[in-house]
Amino acid sequence: MRTEDRNSIRRLAFGVTLAFGLGLLLDWPLAYIGAVFAALFLQAPVGLPLAAFGKLFVFSIGLMLISFILSAVFAPYSVVFLMLVAIGIILSFVWSVSGAGVLPGVIALMGALMIPNLLLQSQDLAFVLVIWIPLNLFFAGCVATLMFTLIPAAPPSQAAQKQAQAAPDFDPARRIFRMSMVTVPFAMVFFLSGSSALLVLFFVALLSQQLAAMPAAGKAVAKAMLTANLLGAAVAIICYEINVIAPVLVTPILLCLFFCLTLGTLGKSGTPLAAAAGSAITTALVVYGGTIAPYSDDADVKSLVRVAQVATAAIFVILAYVVVDEFWPEKKQQEAQTA
Image 1 (cartoon, rainbow, N blue to C red):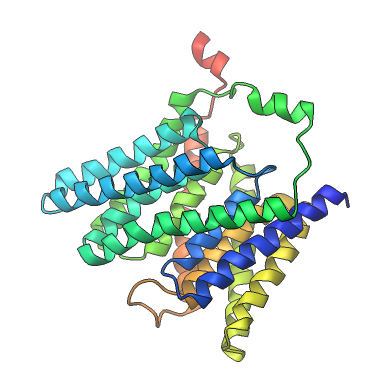
Image 2: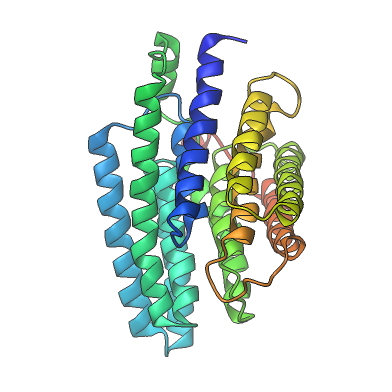
């Protein structure tokens, strides 16, 4: 294994564990979301510049406040409220596809999905979410910056730089349409059913962005994402059962370090499961972190129930993408212009 790969694994494992462990030690709300943010930062080939991180942090604060205010004003008007949720989802995809990136897109989807859903239950809880999502993002960014400083990344090659600077070869309008066809119906059913499983909404925000970033490949993409989420869910269940046997604070911290090292190594291994490792880490953090540090009043919900919730959402989104790929396959930008 190359030195850069080993450094990347160590950065990811120790950085995510630091964010996860400190969140538990300080008893932060939504600490597992901070760990997921850290994982997304640390899976990048290079650290995010401080100026870009500052803009992202300010963006998250403004977005959460706007979502809270609009949701509070229009909550009594169900039809208008659902229309605003749908518009928020579509605008999140527009923002992501326009070049903002995966993480800003995830944050925008959190504002469009999680804040309105929680506000229907309690304005006080929703405002806590407005505060703690940006704070967890800030903490994750500090951890990522620290890890990239302690374990520097090698400068990207010229080929990688040219590839990153190249214009995306896909039809933006068609990609936005495809993502919206999957996520908007799910959100409408979720809100109309009265469900309050924030974990599911956060997971859908992650999964939608991960699938959107992949080239359309129909069943191949579905199989890869399903494998990743099953792998992450299995890791989360094993960690939860070990936590039950040894319910002390050091247990989840060590378990987080172990599965990040294991899955990070898997991601650099070149095996068929390597492509699933990154998504498996985020799935494990969402399910396991949400189980041992629940945010709302459903603290007695067991790990298997959370896995079932996430699995249901994953299966729906993945199968929906298979259908969308069949009837509205993604096109390259040049093809779209000549069509």
